Length: 136
Image (cartoon, rainbow, N blue to C red; front, side, top):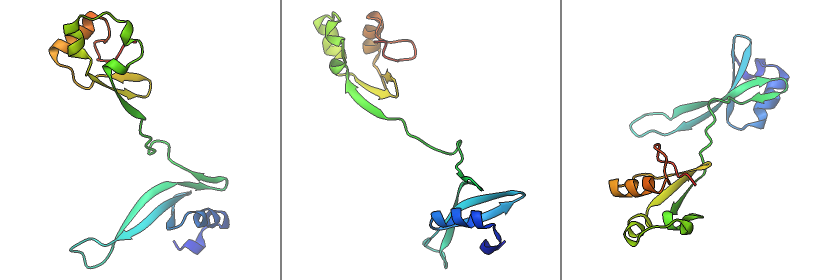
C-alpha cells in the first residue's frame, strides 16, 4: 500500500517521526522506523526496521511490553553504608567485611559475591537474608 493511500490523520502522525513507514494489517495501521546501513560484503545497503507502535486518530500508541528502562544502579563499600558504624565487630571480622562491595538496584542492596567467611560473619550479625540482600 502506498503512503498516500493512508488516511490524512495517519500521515500527519507519520510526519512527526522522521524516517518512518506506515503499514496496514487488517484494520490496524502500524508505524515502523526504517533505516539502511552498509554491510561489508553486501552489494547494496540493508534495511533495518523496528516497530514503533499502532497509529490511531488520537496519536501513536507505543508498545508497553517492548520498552526497556534500565534500573538505576550504584555501588557502595560496606564500610560506607549508613548504620554500619553502630554494629559491633571484632577487629578480625571488620578487616574481613569492610571492603565488601554492594550493588544497589532500585530499593535493595545486594552483595554480588561473598566468600564463605564474609557470608558467615554477615549472617551471624543478621545483615543478610538467604537471598543475599542487605537487611538494614
